[in-house]
Amino acid sequence: MKSMKNSPTYEEKLQALKESIEHWEKDIIPNPETEHFRGDDCPLCQLYKEYPDCGDCPISLADRDCQDDGSYWRKFTANHEKEDALAFVVFMKNLYIEMLEKRAEFRKEHKEWQELKKEKKEEWVDVTREIEWSIRVGHDGFYLIGKYDADMKVIVDKGGLQKNDDFETDIKIKYGESSNFRILKKI
Image (cartoon, rainbow, N blue to C red; front, side, top):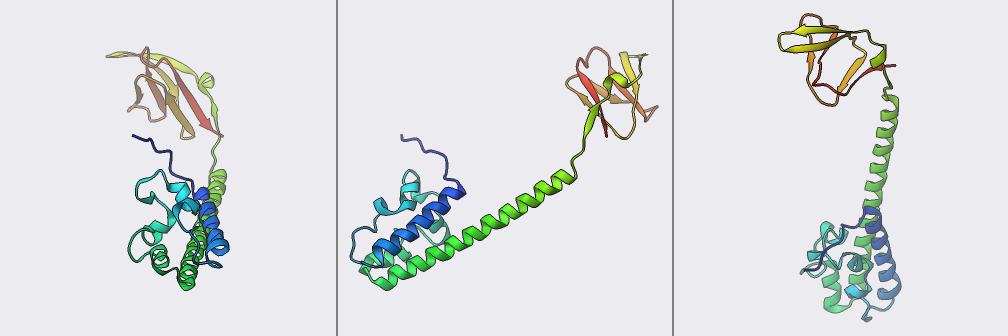
């Protein structure tokens, strides 16, 4: 069985659609009787030839597969009328504009998200060695106890981190189980 490659990127789809429009404007509208309207001549078909049912070709997603009855391509191939070729080009141009608008909207949202992310960026510094630690004996073993405040974050790679119910400002880490931990403080 033939393996399929990854689905084309949005930019590849846009480029292939643009090239398909140019192909129809240059080769088909001036000469509707041409034989250059098949999949071998279509940049979109070339992009999706390895996918069943045209994959996620923008034309098939927006309307229907070119081979389906009632499609713009099928209407043109039935009689090779220039008007049908023009209708297909208008459809593809509108689809291209719609895809450009979606890309612009995505880029705008992504840029806004990146800016928001930068604004909300929190910086943390490792304060593990700065904390005054003590060891307490519990009914189930030894614990490291350290003072904790609201601007701290406890990172434990493995083992048991427990919040001390008696002291809400203490960090309680079971000794021996937590071989690797860090205390971070927001700056």
